[in-house]
Amino acid sequence: MLDTPHPTPVAPCLDQQKLATALSGLHFIGGRYVPAISGQSFAVVNPATGIEVARAAEGDAQDVDAAVRDAARAQKEWAKVPARKRGALVHQCAALLKEHQEELARLIALETGKALRTESRVEAGVVADVFEFFGGLGSELKGESVPFAPNVLSVTVREPLGVVGAIIPWNVPMLLMALKVAPALVAGNTVVVKSAEEAPLAVLRICELMNRILPAGCFNMVSGMGPECGAPLVEHPLVRKVTFTGSVETGKIVAKAASQKLVPVTLELGGKSPMIVFQDCDFAKTVSGALTSMRFTRQGQSCTAASRIYVERPIFDAFVAEMKKAVDGMVMGDPLDEKTDIGTIISQGQFEKVQAYIAEGKATAGATAHECSAMPSDPALKKGLFLRPVIFTGLDGSSRLVKEEIFGPVTVIQAFDDPEAVLAEANDSDYGLAASLWTNNLKVGLDLAHRLEAGLVQINQNLVVQANLSYGGVKSSGLGKEASLEAMLEHFTHKKTIMVNMG
Ligand code: NAI
Ligand code: MG
Image 1 (cartoon, protein in one colour):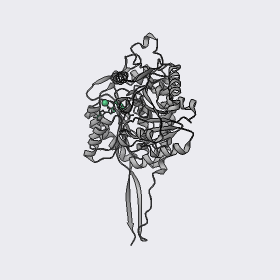
Image 2 (cartoon, protein in one colour):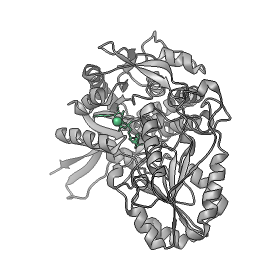
Image 3 (tube, helix red, strand yellow):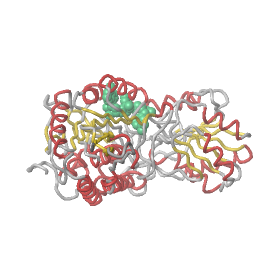
Image 4 (cartoon, helix red, strand yellow):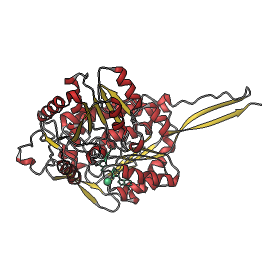
């Protein structure tokens, strides 16, 4: 239970700046807020204004060691709590997070620049849903009985792995954290999360809220830089499972370090998700689906963003025109304003990276950049990292914009004539996270769905991560699944066999 006194408001706090200030400079370890041992901190900046809204504790190996040791101590007791009781506690956490949905939404909007109505509030809601879902799965941690011999009882039991080290990114930090923490806890593990540099606040508040219900040490959080704070977590000898969401490059570093200790690792590493549109689709639904699929409301900062759109030639021009019109109608502005559809890019570094892709696209012979929406006019936002969404046409599979994950509001639309050729192009990618098909010919749709190299294929929809649907990619998009019962069983437990010979 949470040690008092603690520096943050007990009731939901809708003043996001007040809450950000209260959360400044702190990790959450062993049931209480603690500063970084080194005393160091780093700035958390509101990307819509460029203003520093908080400091975050700059953790290093010492803080990580303290957190992992507390988690290891707590795990011994937590594993003894009956599985259904663990689930019930996680379920209670979900209820508390629901009470704090608006608070968390405002806080995440402040630190990430994601629009409150279209993104932040939605994320906060899905987070509670994920905890609620896994909270109900305690009694599913079942084993099997194995036929062996009449006088031998042979059974398997599911045991927790121990301390889980979870490393998360900044794009959907609360949800991506929930997908790791919820199943890990219900399965009897304890967790140390390393938050993303750009978005450490809302996840820290969630950790505090859940610690009002969970025993101390079960859920710990440190903030800091990747190499100084993330790497020691992966390498810590008491961390018996690593789960990571982020870039391919960092994912490989994490997997290599985990392999040195021979501990299992789950990786979710992004994608370059194709959206394939046939002329017999429901046109209006598909255009609106393209906006959702591309995650324009999240500035395209999504691992499943439909950043390669293939449209059957007869409807290509009409599709591009309608899509541009639809994106033009989206309002870019203050993330906390209810009217806003599109907020900002997360950081100056990402802003420049995305701009470099746009410049490269514009410089490619034959390419057209359709720039959409209007920049916000409010002078308070003039330093904000706003970037107009861009739809490219006239690029082909040789372009870096078609091959690489841009993680910005940039999509490339290409025309196709032949389903086999478009399938080959869609599969010609290092990535394999998600794909969508838009057609009323379900025979063709289902056939292609089976042959697309992706962890998730949706026909005539492109929903975000949902509790109970296994989520995770093939090829460079990662290893393992999240969000489902199978994910909890396969990635957060090991199966022990017990045999009793009764003579
Ligand atoms: P990143 O992969 O470097 O960062 C993700 C997390 O890993 C952060 O918490 C970071 O501190 C941590 N980290 C970094 N180096 C580490 C190390 N050596 N050991 C342990 N942890 C480490 O991603 P970044 O730099 O924020 O974004 C770069 C690109 O990655 C984006 O442009 C995008 O293409 C991709 N990305 C993909 C995401 C996804 O959902 N799969 C999420 C975020 C970024
Ligand atoms: Mg990085």
